[in-house]
Length: 99
Image (spheres, rainbow, N blue to C red):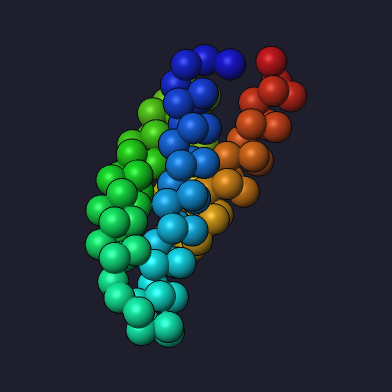
């Protein structure tokens, strides 16, 4: 697997984990009303990983020669929680099937 695709995989997984941390932090801030520490910690982490995920999709799309609709789907998967994992898995199986 090319380095770009491997890095994309790591960033997609990290982005999903940061979503989990942010959602847990939001629960404690808005539902349990016990403080906003989780949001203050995971908000910036998730923001940075979101940007890295978008850059990773673009870099991986160039390396693997994804179509424009596939690239657009990858970019759209940055928004709903945990869909970056689904997209990463889908593209990993597609890439390994062609190698």
